[in-house]
Image 1: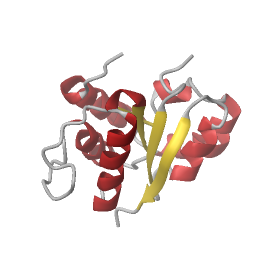
Image 2 (image 1 turned 120 degrees about the vertical axis):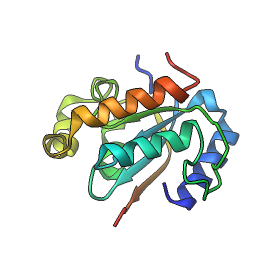
Image 3 (image 1 turned 45 degrees about the horizontal axis):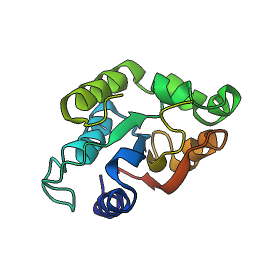
Length: 109
Length: 43
């Protein structure tokens, strides 16, 4: 995750409280999704950015996950995301996200 | 009622995956509050 976004996540979490924040990721690959998810839960794994060593434990989901899909309007989802959902490696992304949440998430509800 | 209702949402989209505005558009029908939306480029 780029450094500016890490700073924003840090600032917004301080402002609103970690329990009130949810991060949504649109990464194209499972590995990138996992890195972004790890960054907002366990801290920046590359130790380069503002979230290095900062364990926010935020709720984090990818836009192709059922939790997001079932929460939004089906027609809008199909228009906006349906096409990419067919192209992306959805199963791998979901597996990666579940693993990171299970390991580092503080709000597993 | 979903996990997103009443929550502050941070969107980290991807130019080659799902861009921020697409995720934002989907959330308009919910009670979620998008506080930040960006679209990263990994190239």
